[in-house]
Length: 347
Ligand code: HPA
Ligand code: ZN
Image (cartoon, rainbow, N blue to C red):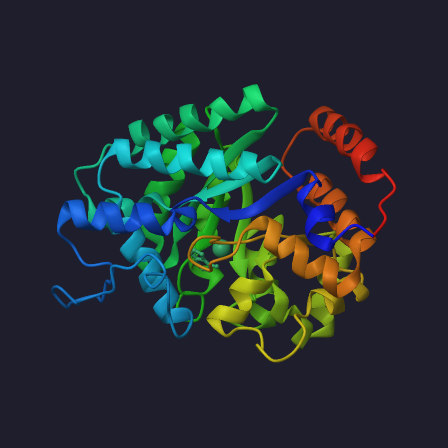
């Protein structure tokens, strides 16, 4: 009988919720911090907080707040356009090695600019897009979503949205909302999303991760979010589950992320199966794979072990439908993976 690992390794993979910065290999992070003479740890308002320099230890955090600071530390280590190009190049290599064939990737340009005000952000994004396009020769395609960081407030968010609109059609397809959900609710960003949607950008938002079901409802009703990042706390309110079902709004579910940030109980099965059973559209994603010391492959394995390979394959098909590809591209992708997913598996 084929092992879960072998069965999952051979599957084509679709990754809709993945942060590019959160994919930085630990070894590269340590190298970049050493070169710049900075710590691997970042704490706001505190100069030079010592941090580990063993790649096996740099990505560790106790809760969601510490995770966000680790994400900030990683972003601080990415100083110039070449660093971002390297990040994208290594991302592509890691994605191709796992048979990722389509991905929509978050970037957080307002965090880059916070640490490196001199960085030419649009030029850096163009460089990233160029590196991602190298994957086409290997049958994989990636698009970018500019993730607005809530902590910087609506004005900074509008600047990010304007820049994303300028790069629309040039590799940037959408806008997202990340950062501290518990202190910066969706409704603060209504105008920003209205602008972005009018400019042709697709809309997603992290919600129902560090805040409850109401945050999911607000992301849909105030922002027009077409997909929700995480959204697992929708389970706290049946009316929000109804809303997700009625509007067919998919949840990008990231099991290991939720366990490590403490938003899902570690000692209980992840609630993705409950969401699926409630009729909500689920996709499986890795969020910040390097930071969470996971990968899209590992997340698929977790799911296959929990609910079986056939359900995992359905989640992959759901991800194609939930993607922001146009109808013709979705059809082509569905046909391409259809032949592979239908292949009988001994597992
Ligand atoms: N939530 C909020 N902000 C983030 C995340 C996340 O999962 N990943 C990177 N920034
Ligand atoms: Zn995320």
